[in-house]
Length: 226
Image 1: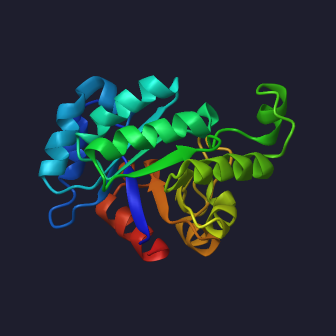
Image 2: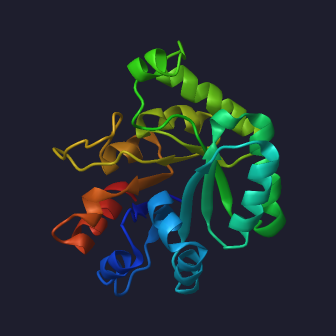
């Protein structure tokens, strides 16, 4: 079930299309996030699905339950394989999201963001006024996610063991090759360590998209993780 998801955080469709020319015989799992979706819209997602790509639509919905429910119906119609919301929206919101999604796409997995990988314990305490540790906060949000009936969570690879114990899937960004810069991530891991920790999916961005040899970098991730 493990898989490598490429974070396609490009400025526009042209850049994405140029990047995908590196994959002539492989159809990797792609993450389409806010930057790309808000510029190119649903049509891009439909095109990629028609071409055989699996899609993680990473929009992190966080609103009142009714709004999220209706938004999820539209996301479901795009036929994506994986999408997400913020667990901070609460159990009622998460249930409403799941209900909306299942009305239009019963095969799409729905996961919740526990804490962004850019958040550390200091930010949690001083800016968000959450006095629990990252580990305890992630665990509590994941428990709420499970109560809501979702498939899993987005978390750091470092929290993957907690999630695995709960019987949930973990989608883990913050993946870097050894000796690579952490950039704006606070809690990171290599592909091989993420595998050891029990991540279900790893989301890899710049380590692949900015590599000198894109296909080689992707295959390295696959070898180390799968």
